[in-house]
Image (cartoon, rainbow, N blue to C red; front, top):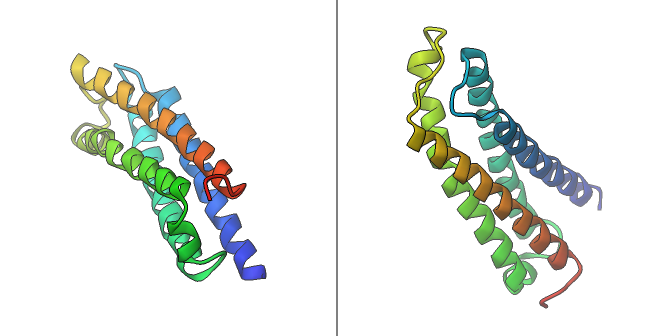
Length: 150
């Protein structure tokens, strides 16, 4: 059915968006940022949230209204693994997002943000963990798509 394919494509595009925006954050983030780098991080993080939300919304639409139906997905242990890893990734992303939003008091005045070493190290660690978890999401999705675990 064409609508299934369109929702699958939107789901994949949003998932690629999550990976791309996290990669940009990971590449751009450093302990001392310029004003321009901080603004880019703030904008990219907004798109990270938008694409992650799109993945969840479209994913659940696919589970409940398209594809194989909710009974199939909820019976799959790998679906639960994939969803759990994605949700944990999202929860971990709250800390960097709150820090990036907190920089607004600096960026509104066209100033570079000020971070402690602890904040910087924590953000870097979280970005690294998020990448690892997204690799897990991709592996679980690939195995699930092949019917493994059913």
